[in-house]
Length: 314
Image 1: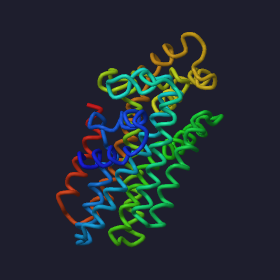
Image 2: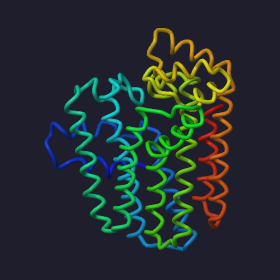
Image 3: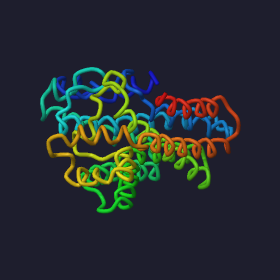
Image 4: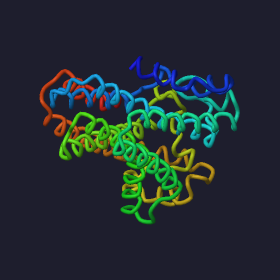
């Protein structure tokens, strides 16, 4: 991934000297980089499957990975300002160093530079897919501000929100590298599903870790979702066992003691275990799809990476 991050940092030069260090701040090897790793490995696995060896195609697939990570990080700049975050990836968050306005503008700048790289690929279908991811991220953020009225509506709302806000970026990026290889519509759909399933699984694992990991493990404060008024999968599962959680969900955990009480109930419930089971189901579905590709080192690495997503829970 070193060349991808180096390419991103290079793409964020050629502008005001004041803007460069802000725009480049999160683009290093400190992060998980799980999205570009999955996307690039899937691209190589598909290339192997189709016996595609064109260096031009490989370079355009690498650019898709750069765009993917840039869209993701641009959102983090805005998230950290909105959430008044104090840390990200075990270092001070961008807003703690540069305040409010500069990080927001830096995020806009990063997003703007993705358009330049997209133009270099010069493929209308790829441009549409990447545009769709930005639409979905915005819709997902808006959906996060609300929820359904019943337990069933809440969980359906959570799944759709999680796809749009989180998994859509990986799903559409995985889909985008496929046509560059000359994949047919069936293979492109399979690539989309692999990205969707792994993206959903990764978020579900994050939901569990929000209750069980330390701040150092997460690279951000633990138990942050409820403190921001959000009900993630373990909360929603726990509410089926402890209905009193529904009242707290409705008021976004704003009353004194709500977060602490909800936390204790979630640990007493089967919410964490059911979330782990759901994450495992998504990973199993991804493995089933990956198994349809021809054997290659990249396919094997994706099998290993899928297991590592779940191993974060152990």
